[in-house]
Amino acid sequence: MASAITAWAVTTGEAGMRTQARGLAQAVAGTVIEKTAPARWPWGAKGAKDDRFEPPWPDLLITCGRRSVPLSIALRKRAGGQMITVHIQDPRADAAAFDLVVAMEHDRIAAGPKVIKVATALHDLTPAKLAAAAARWRDRFEALGGPLVGVSIGGTTRRGAFTLAHGRDLIDGLQRLRREAGASLAVTPSRRTPPATRALLRNAFGDDPGVFLWDMTGDNPYRAILALADRLVVTGDSVSMISEALATGHPVEVFDLGFARYAPFLDGLIARGLVRRFVGEPIPRHAANPMNATAEAAAAVRGLLQARTGVVG
Image (tube, rainbow, N blue to C red; front, side, top):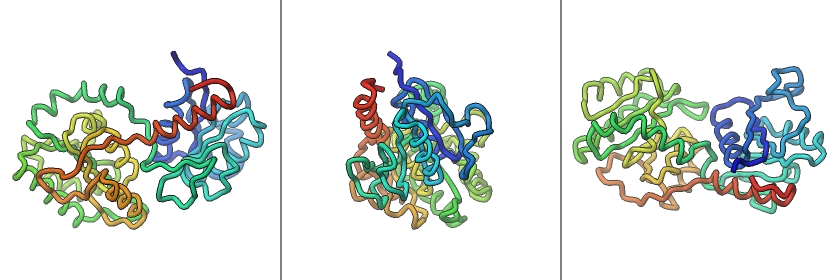
């Protein structure tokens, strides 16, 4: 039966923020409306209808990212207790300003009555979405032979550059898998992948019948790769990509770009045996332990909803 809970998933528009707010909202609520708020006042009062922040209030307001903190606090006051407010990531503000804060283990905010700490980022990946993607791409990837290694490549961020040296080292490791493990590859770059790196990939694998290299046209095979690969290699520039890979239950290896901002996250996962650094070893030497922080956060939110409204999402 569909949930009667309504939710707003509010961010300032960044893709990584949207997938976290949307994923938690969809895990709990039957009706989810995504809203985009500007970083400063006035918060969408004169914007498109879906981006206005006025009654009727939802049962649940989910925000993500520090730039949406002032909006969440202001709306909580305006709504007068009519909605539960949940903020994702360390707000760098008093947790008492929210009903719940969902922060990552490496964030500075301490766990407490209103703060839960999770090991990975939230996301909107679900078994149903993976199964649907797998059904569309299964024949194409099975034709490559196996075992299949899925490769998700990000790129340059504000935290650091994805250099040509990074691209060469990653390709060297992938070519080792082709030679020594007989692995096939399904590789998907992203919009952030530097053109020079995409050119290196084409030169290395463009004529290889055992490699699928997405040319960034048509349907994105990203979810199908997550679903169908026997082993996943993810570049270390995206907490979201690593978190989604971990939710699949496949062994995950991270190609470490050396970005200091992500070091605590990656080091924590390695310490727990959830991932290894990718160096092209023919056999991954760690177990597959699926982890879905979205489900953990959703359970906490359902508890709040039941206590406040008597309705479980």
